[in-house]
Image 1 (cartoon, rainbow, N blue to C red):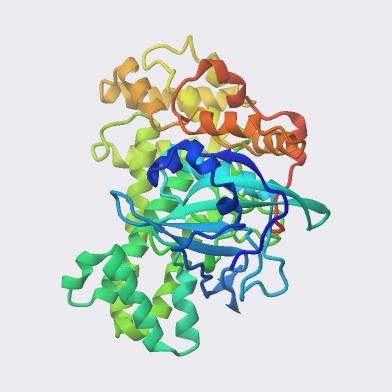
Image 2: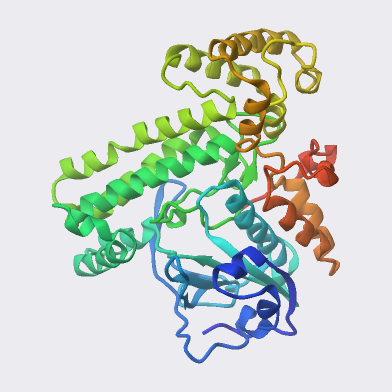
Length: 463
């Protein structure tokens, strides 16, 4: 059961997430005691789930929902959506923790969940944040908060690893059958449903991470206990969006070895699928069958990323220029270090295929202007080869290259204000980030390069 939170107050509600479960924002706001766990609906049976996992590549054993409690599921036209309190107090799996979340990390999770949905990337959703002046000790004393988050399921790779490493294959089968029956029912007709499950999850994971790479999103803690069996982005902790491009950027200050750096995310995703395969092996049977399922990862990731990169550059002919396009992409990433990732792709849509005279807004992002000019000539030749129409291409590129992402400094400004009980910036960011591809000229400053002080911001696992 949740632990009551003293004198709670509402911070924010996502109208789009509320709509998913048939509620208005006002109806959500009117349920404040439920949002923080001070009241439990009669029909609810709160529970916390056990799971295990590999943390930073090392087997950590039993973990579980240390500060997350499942409230229940809401029926929706798309199927049941689970509602989960995050920060509602201790559970049997809290270990030495207090089961609480803090306002700082709760705002980050709330905003990024909804921002990722706005970007079209599979993700858990966030319904609300409620806070309290009740103190919580982290590096310093912070204030408590509870996020209510939504997903069809919060089952993780580590949920399977738990039963495998305990050699409890009956429970492993119950869990796998539950996931198949509820989320992959088409696999029931296959010769080996458990192999099919691994293949589907592997493919979804590959596609999700390709989408992360394409917008410069870095999760920060890709442990197997943070990997969704549905291929959703879950457990927003020390995440970040790429600003000045650095392929080896580490967004998590705790990640001393850089295991989860931007450039490592694709291979870590594959590694995590191997960990899931190991856990499912008693059900799949033969190692060769598990390997066959895992073999879909690399081609699925490569094909999805290739598709996304072509779209980001406004190129419609994917196969006719395959070798030249690979060289074009490689040359682009070679010149990008130090250049703002989001602004580069957004401004690229304004490049004219026949005329370099209007290149300044894009060119000015580069210190090495000559390198940009050389690449731009190569890019123009490619556009001319497929008779690209500038106006059509820019419209298409603006639908896949966001103008707005949740930059760390934007989140920090919202957090600083919220800690003074001003939640207006949380609401404004939520509204902007739900439509990241729209111009929204009245909010241009939210697409600006980060200020100098933002370079000193650090995020870690200590939320």
